[in-house]
Length: 411
Image (cartoon, rainbow, N blue to C red; front, top):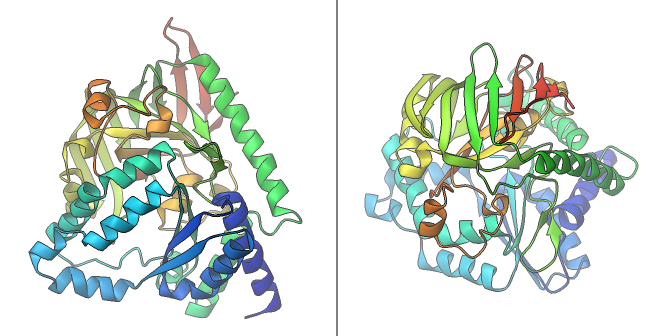
């Protein structure tokens, strides 16, 4: 490892702990990470203890091991989450801990595996850990997602390079995207967050009723929830602190009205879904529900995701990202949602983020559904932004305001 790489990884770990997680003294940190991310994770552990962590625990993942599990485990096992895992997540919520997810898995790790088995394990996790998803989306814990290059992931991004060259090039891109190549990364993030807050302030002031998306292959109307709130950058926890869940983040986002989506939308970037790549797909909505789905690749995996529960056929998130943005301008398809969603306007099928609904913090699942807030065991983002995308916002009194023109902010 070169001195430059080591220094950048140190800065990245510091940014992850201090800005992303904003770890507080006395909090515990749980880390989920691929084995190949160990050099970075060790730096995060050091930073966490330096910032007053009570305990740091790491749960290592390996795609090949998980593939064997998905292929060979009894079907009954795929339908269960171990009780010790459930208890771990319960304690995490009760203690207001931190969770770091390090992404870097092979986006094609589970191609060829029966999609039914993939759906069973995803559904089990979604149903039996639903309480944790709710707690995350409310802000009961600090959590963040960051990326670390692995050989398999890097080679899907740069297939014409050697493994070593692909990993180095992916590190270079990540460092640029997360701003650790700048003299003061922490200040750079403060400036960036201020820019995102300016956008959310304008959108929240206008209280748009409907967004209309129009491009060569998309024509979609989305009614926003009457009590929607636009968010971007850091999130407020339920115990008075702030953290930034996605490093990087370029989006501002809110919640749609569950039954208020109509029209057709086409994806503009590949989607890594349950270890399979889904490409060039269209979804048609009527009264909020997906009524038709087409895909050139990965259709069966997409259909299984939609069949996970009723809520997966409705939208839970609407996010705006300019086409002229740092990630998009790299002209790299990352085959990883953390990066691709922050290069493009996107939508999410499945659970709504309750932070996006004013006054929803104490509502039950049934009350949220009655209120028009989509509920699901899943949450899958997919990218729809393009250089020809126009978006208009319409207010309750009929005023129509351009929000995006040719893929970029129009105000």
